[in-house]
Amino acid sequence: MIFSCSGVSKSYGTDTILEKVSFNIDDKEKAAIVGVNGAGKTTLFKIISGEIPNDDGEIYLRKDSYLGYLKQNAQTEGTGTIYNEMLSVFRGLIKIEDDLREMEKAMAGLNGIRLDEHMKKYSDLQHKFESLDGYSYKSRIKGVLKGLGFNENDYERPISSLSGGQKTRVYLGSLLLSNPDLLLLDEPTNHLDIESITWLEEFLRSYPKAVIIISHDRYFLDKIVTKTIEIENGKSHVYEGNYSFYAKNKEINRQIEQSHYIQQQREIKRQEDVIAKLRSFNREKSIKRAESRQKMLDKMEVVQRPENLPEKMRLRLTPKITSGNDVLHAEGLSKSFPDKKLFSNVNIDIKRGDKTAIIGPNGTGKSTILKILLGKTNCDGGEIRLGTNVHIGYYDQEQHNFDESKTIFQEISDEYPNMTNGEIRSVLAAFVFEGDDVFKTISSLSGGEKGRLSLAKIMLSKANFLILDEPTNHLDINSKEILENAINSYDGTVLYVSHDRYFINKTATKVLELTPDGMNQYLGNYDYYIEKKTLAKREQELFGESSLPETNNIKQASQTKLNYQAQKEQQAKERKIKNAINKVEREIEETEKKIEDLNNKLSLPEIATDAQKAQEIYEEKTSAEEYLNSLYEKWEGLQE
Image 1 (tube, rainbow, N blue to C red):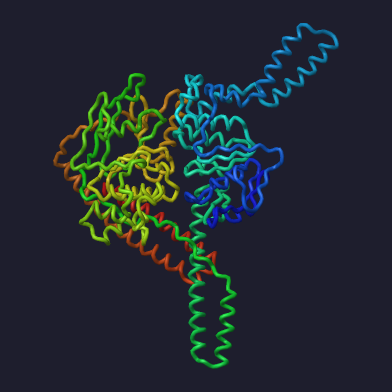
Image 2 (cartoon, one colour; image 1 turned 90 degrees about the vertical axis):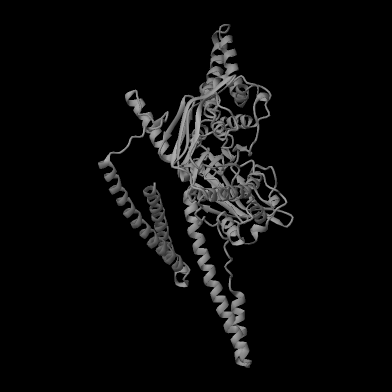
């Protein structure tokens, strides 16, 4: 064990941030700290690093261990070039290398015993240099800089000329090269594109020492960590697995906790009724029995009501106006700036119902593509055609255009005065604004809450084609899941740019990879895209050539009229599809009824007290829900 946190607590006045937080980290272990925004994750990192004191508890770091800490959006304070900043990590190693060169020069003037003594010192120093991996430090610098998105032309750039995000990447690079025994990383994927995040995953997975990560990037956590520490209501809960393992088991535990709570509340109510009845008899014997029961009730260890998890979206959102099947066709788009070519020969074809992700390294022009499609930026060449009845809604996490003095309810009702109070509440509930939450002022909302409200407004508009630019930026995990459910339950068309691979995996039906020479299309989610890219790379290595993407430089297929026989065949096919749709709809109804029955079983007292039985029912319910999702996907495919 290299590190432990035992009973650590921290308060500010009456506000308790952390309460008896405890966990251990072993050598080489990779762990995640998760929790909603404001849960105290960064506060815990500051305590571990010694930046702020804890009120109670103990922090243990093995003697002579070096701790490295990447603060969220930390920036290098160096004044030289990028490469010199990396070299500064190896000052001690460079001093040894310089001493070796000086000793080599001095050898020519020595002989006899003095030469023997000199060679002994030289041999000892060379052995130390080798043990510190001195011959590879320059290649390690180049590997880290390349992995973080810098090329050799950037090495001599002054740090003063870099953007904030680039300075953060330089800081991260120098920290990784310093090789700490315990590495604390607070949102390390900020300012990284997908290629750099993938490189960082591989680096950390093979990192020979311990790492603790705070991140909202669930795909990143799944690839790296083997332990997940949740901070909720100030307390810690440890799960021995990655993020997906934690998410699944947390939900199971919450269901069991909820069942125990409901069962105990029923028993308390029953006992109170019995006590009240005994007192009403107003006889000495019955009053004594009532007092005895009351004492037993007072000694009962009360199960605290578990906080409700954010509800999954249940409302299916349908645009008021349905677009034609052809939503967007762009052909031959190109864009250059005086000092740089962004892209050329970009072709895009979007059909109604598509959920399409645009990916690519930073600087390739992904956001520029969206601005061109929106008419906010001119392109150098090419043409864009929108389909019939296409109405665009643009979603940018940074720009919401709200009246901060209004409540959530007022923001919707003023924008859509014809909606009833019930209709407004139904839509807001779909985005997890329920009860008195709808009367919160917009100025009091978090970034994630404002993002959800912005999306709700867009989906209530005439928009049937959503264009989203990095919609998950600055969202906590719960808000990301709500956004995923919103997109998956949306009957319109969605095109978005994102670096969030977990989000892409959950929502995309098509991935467009932007390159300087065009757009490559993959008909699946992010895992499917990676599978195809890996296969192509293997083919390249084995045969010197690789299979092309499924669609490269998309062109409109020519339309021909069907002859009479072809029309008859088409009609027969349509009848077959309609019958299949009816069958799937019946299966959906049956599966939904089964899920409802299983939910009712979970709340029964005899099930709530039997953890094994509760888990079996929960797993059966989860399996039914997965099958229901597959039925919905099948139904959507048949509809298309």
